[in-house]
Image (tube, rainbow, N blue to C red; front, top):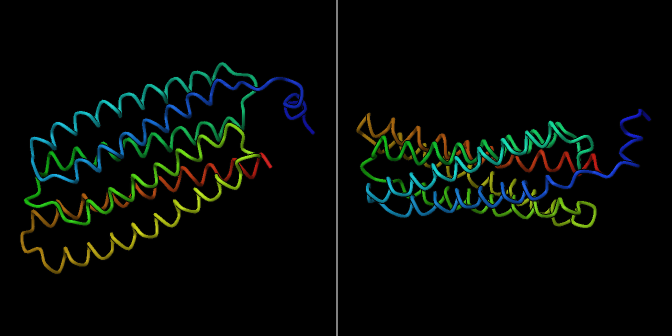
Length: 216
């Protein structure tokens, strides 16, 4: 056993990270909630309003990310591996950035109609963020909450599979029925980033599963 691993048994861990994780997860859920709201309306003015709110949430997420990285640089003993803290924070940030990217594209592209699948995929993204929030909360006592965390990680995997099905069916329908090349390109790009966002949510839970294995 090397000296760093030995020290972890005797030096108190820095628990200041957990409130940052909780804040980050709450902010993630807020972004997904706003995306779901955006996909529930076809009003361009409402899209602009909600996009501005999502942009504010994204800025808050960036601030939380910066605080976490600063804490990482200052802390000697962390609650789990430094690389995992960095990866977990970066992965959550990626999801919020992608949600912001979706809303921005809706406002910029102004598709004539929002495909019904947008609403379904936004609901899947929101459901995934709620499961991530459960996982993050459980990390406060990973040993006691291992079963619950694992269940939520599995739920996100199932959500990702469902979102993939939505995506492939929607792409097939889009290329079969859409005759306007501009609308086809707009909707194709929006679908791609929606699908990628669910993948990124799964990346968060993959990191959490790795943390659980290392803490066992």
